[in-house]
Length: 67
Image 1: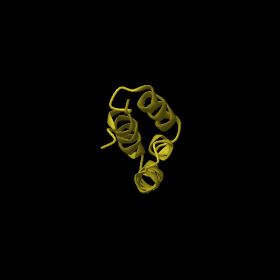
Image 2: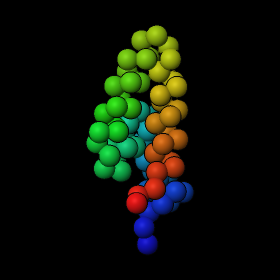
Image 3: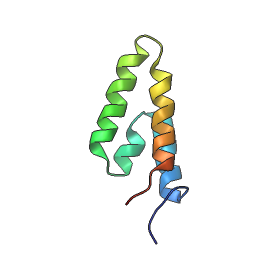
Image 4: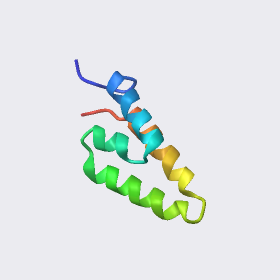
């Protein structure tokens, strides 16, 4: 059985991203995407827009489907 959208792995990844943007992607093995999410959120939190990337990170981790 592959882990798809809504799987336990995705729920765990979304929870990880809730605490640190990009951590969920890192848990899923998507290092480059994790780095992008973390850096964008860090940069945008300076101007109070980091919550946008933070939410995107959570949703992306929850909806990820391994091909």
